[in-house]
Structure formats: structure tokens, C-alpha cells
Image (cartoon, rainbow, N blue to C red; front, top):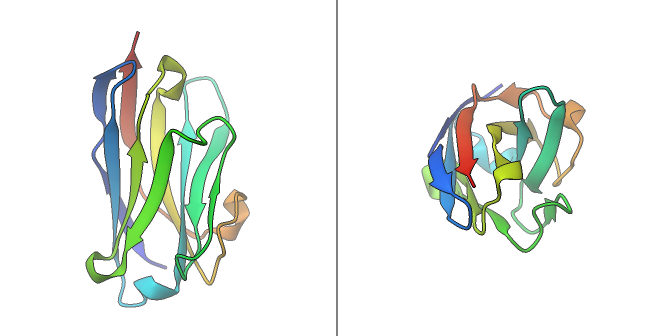
Length: 124
């Protein structure tokens, strides 16, 4: 399993942007499919976006399509989530997840490495 650490969360006004980063401590980063999930207070975990181990395939929740972009930089062992046009409903703790040979899957069960999360708060 890889160790994952998210950064980039914070407080932003509605309509603003944030970029989350997740860096992995593993020499096999190229083999990892990666995803972002989020959890708001009182709500269950929600799939946000995923990118396959090859980078060729991406997948997004309907609620973020057109606003969020997931990408990866294998040279930096990092996956990014660019979040634009943020809404108060995007307020949540965002978690990075990884799984070997996973191809942009939206199911949590496909991922066995998880970061501690980073808080994103969008004010209205």
C-alpha cells in the first residue's frame, strides 16, 4: 500500500477555485489508479473523480462534471484535483485514494490506500 497525503484545501468563496494535490510515497506510483472522494458532515462518502493507472481514462461524478479536472504527474508521484466554479455544496473533507491497476473506478472498494483528507469550505 502507498502512503497518500493531501494538500491544498482551504476556505474559498462561491465561484472561486482551489487545486488539491495528493502525493504518494511509493516507487510504483505509475501502477496506481487514483481517485478523489469527499464526505460532508452528516453525509456519506461520495465519489468525485478518478484517473486510471495509465492516465488515459478519467471519470467524474455528475455533480462536478465540467467544473473539476483530475490529472496526474507520475514524475512527481502526485495526482491533482482542479476545482473551479466552487459551490457551497462542494464543502467537504476531500480524500485521495489509490489502488494498483485500477481504471478510474468510482467504487471505494477498489482502492486500498487512503490519505487522511483535506478540508474544503466554500462560503456563499
